[in-house]
Amino acid sequence: MKQHDWIAILDFGSQYTQLIARRIREQQVYCEIVRFNTPAVELAKRKPKGIILSGGPASVLADGSPSVDLAIYEMGVPVLGICYGMQLMGRDLKGRVRPGKAREYGSATISVTDPDLLFKDLPNILEVWMSHGDQVEELPPGFSVLAKTGTCPIAAMADRKRNLYGLQFHPEVVHTPRGVEILRHFIVDACGCACNWKMSAFVEESIQAIRQKVGSDHVLCGLSGGVDSSVVAALLHKAIGKQLHCVFVDNGLLRFKEAEQVEDTFGKTFGMDLHVAHAQDLFLGRLAGVTDPEKKRKIIGATFIDVFAEEARKLGQVKYLAQGTLYPDVIESVSPLGGPSVTIKSHHNVGGLPPDLQFSLIEPLRELFKDEVRELGRELELPDFIINRQPFPGPGMAVRIIGEVCKDRVDLLQQADLRVQDEILKLSNYKDIWQAFAVLLPVQSVGVMGDERTYENVVAVRAVQSLDGMTADWFRLPYETLDRISTRIINEVRGVNRVVYDISSKPPSTIEWE
Image 1 (cartoon, one colour):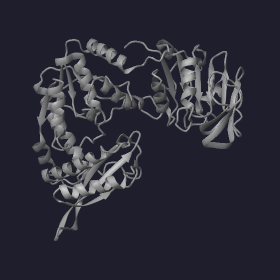
Image 2 (cartoon, helix red, strand yellow):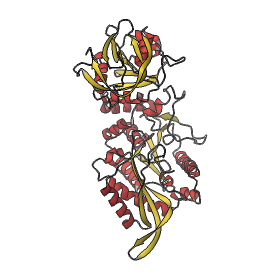
Image 3 (tube, rainbow, N blue to C red):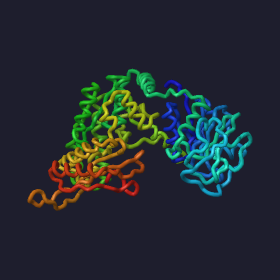
Image 4 (cartoon, rainbow, N blue to C red):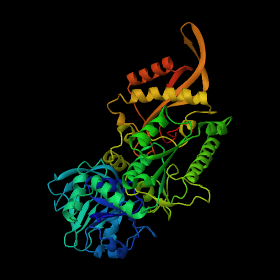
């Protein structure tokens, strides 16, 4: 890859660390999150234009709290400490940190006493977001105060000669309305970064890197039809053409006509070497009589591996396996709370393959966040219905059918879900919905259709908003939309006489029902 100007973010475990990275990427500046204890000599080899010390849950006053290689401050590049990072900088550089008289958490107002570089062209009074107990009580030698609050006399500080800066608040969150401008002043004005991290350039650089790595060898890609695997396939196809072999497993548990969409888009439109394994009968046969959610997942996972492995063997000698690993997956390995090796989400990782199938991994998306993957998809001219596709569980409809899974119940749920998707897409703010879908419940209820009494199925509708799927709140669908969804499902889907709406959040509930 071409060497871009970049910012190193040392992660001390803040819930906002990824958000710092997102805000920097939005300025078209490349950045990476690295472990807090990364040696300065190791960083220096990669020549970052600047360093950010993130916030974190620990106290710098506690024994064993995360610390930084002190040589970081002597590298000659600008350093910005945020919250814990500022307190750490204050302690390391011979200032004094103490527990605050009042813990500040939430919205606060700072008074800018010295506009300096960070607050250039900004008002003297700013709303910011605080989240701290400790604070810098005495400035380190060479530092001056840039801003204060009523309870925090040093809310921002700077040592102009050494280009060292500290912010007690979080500029990366939306609750600090002018925070992006403060960050931009640091990365552009202090660090001198060129804003040239663009997706069009990423495409060209990735293509060159893939060609160089793969050479004349071949690559296998498990294509699910979801955003990540679709973008991986499109990028690899653009890079190596017929050396890419995609395997799509139709397990019979997908959304209505989804298998046909995948075949049309990637096989016919893009002209990829697409191998479709029609394994609906095998999956449904193994699921017959199974009602336990965990057993269903294990059966589907094991069957997928069996089918995928068989298709892979048919291709002969293939050296590489492509995976849709994203940057948040990689970040888990560098967080203070993460493990020593990269963690890959299970729906990206074709794990448990037989010993006779040994691949080297190729992960072209491992530098990107999800929204950047969607942007990459647009650069690669993937259709909107793929780029904007909502997350879909690996086990498919099986975890949205509560109880036994059989073809009749899958068919019914596909039709109900189709009506949900149709109506959701009519909303002007449908992109604000993380997931919306139908669930088939294992109960029947009494109803009346015409003059006849019915005893038929109940469908639940679920719609949530979320940033990452880790937490979620139920989405407030308009009553008119709920009315149309219910009316259409009951009138158009034979076997359903009642529709309910799930208004639970995660936690304590999960997004999926199983």
